[in-house]
Amino acid sequence: MKVIVAVVGRARHPAVGPAARDYEERAARYWPMHVREVREEPARGVGPDQVRDKEGVRLLACAPVGAHVVACDPGGRDMTSEAFSAWLQQERERGVDLCFMIGGAHGLSDAIRSVARTRLSLAPWTLPHEMARLVLAEQLYRAGTIIRREPYHK
Image (cartoon, rainbow, N blue to C red; front, side, top):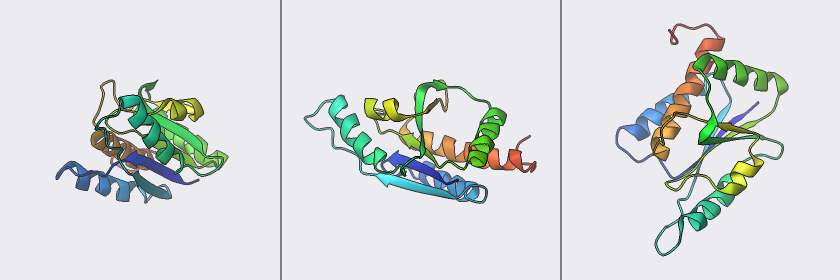
């Protein structure tokens, strides 16, 4: 199983970007992990739907054929850290690649929501995409430590 995190834009914030990359590196100790950053669509003179659709095409191109697409979406399924780690372990045993999709400032396209087998809520709030990336990376790392019964998760 590979874990792909497809995200719109780079993590540029001086604190959030390095923190996200740190947790991505930590998570890669537990999961073969690849982060794919796609270009943000300029929003000047176009509506949010057009922006989402164009970014959605780029995000979907990051998903390997047959991958289990996971839309990171505030309206998705809530999971505790323990439930998330159990779910990841189940997917690992199935041998399916997972592709987590994090939209840009306008969210995810309907095309992504329609192909996603799972919709996952990272928080009950709407998060900036940089923060969503950080939260997902930390939870992927935490899940690995839970599965291996390491002391990080208390």
